[in-house]
Every structure is written in C-alpha cells, then in structure tokens.
Image (tube, rainbow, N blue to C red; front, top):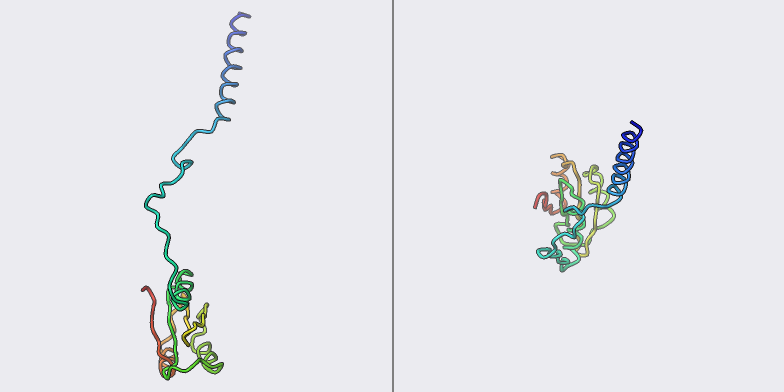
Length: 130
C-alpha cells in the first residue's frame, strides 16, 4: 500500500513538473510569424501640397468633404472665413490650402439653406466618398 502511494505521488509530481515546463515553452503560431510583405507596396506621397492637404482630411475618415474657393478666384479673407464658419457650424476640420481654397471635413451634412448661402459666395466642390 505504501509503495502504491509513493508511485502515485511520484507520477503526480512528474506530471506537475512536466506541465510547468511545458507552460513555459512558447509555441510558435501563425500570429508570431513575420507577415508576408512580398505584395506590400507603400502608398506614394501626393505630388502637390493641395493633394497632401486633401489626403490629410480624407485620412480622418470624415463622411463629408468639401472644397470651398471664392468664385472670383481671389485670396480668402477673414470675412470669408467667418461666412464659412457661420454657415457650416458642424464642420470639424478646416484646412487652408496654398491655392486659395479651403478643405472642410465633417461627419454631418451642411443644411440646404446654409449650403445655398455658401454657394452664392463660393465655388463648392463635394469630395464626399470620392
């Protein structure tokens, strides 16, 4: 009887030690492997400042992206900025470009009456979803 208990106890201890050492060994999995980058192609840098500004706004994943410029082609004034902010209060991101344009990003549409006011003064280009 004593011998049987010793044998069982030896087996339990051996299994416990085996379990401890097996748990410390890190198994290789598919997630641990280096990903296949043979088909990876980095995105090229946009050529112009305007394209970089547009990419910046698009990378923010806004639902709506508009480009505003004056109809007469002149440089935007502080008064123009005030009109834009007043008529598009839900726009989150405004980026002034080097070509007298402003790129606006928002997750909410501009209401129809406000858009009509903006279209009287500005050329409006809708880049949403493009």
